[in-house]
Length: 87
Image (cartoon, rainbow, N blue to C red):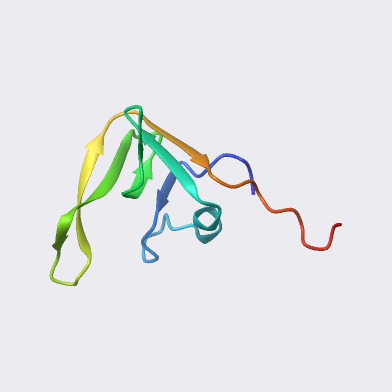
């Protein structure tokens, strides 16, 4: 896996932008210069994030989200693991 996070990532397993390996490494998000821990989905190239709208849920029990536009930066919080057989 490369050292740059995906351009578009979602924490929802039903999404086509869900990437388990990237989420296991931890992805940090800076939106408009402020680090955010409540991001549900982001797109760096399109310049937006989705965050939960309080404790509100839809009729299926999933959190309602709001899309915020602005500059997005992403990075991995942990380095990539080396191949397990090499030591």
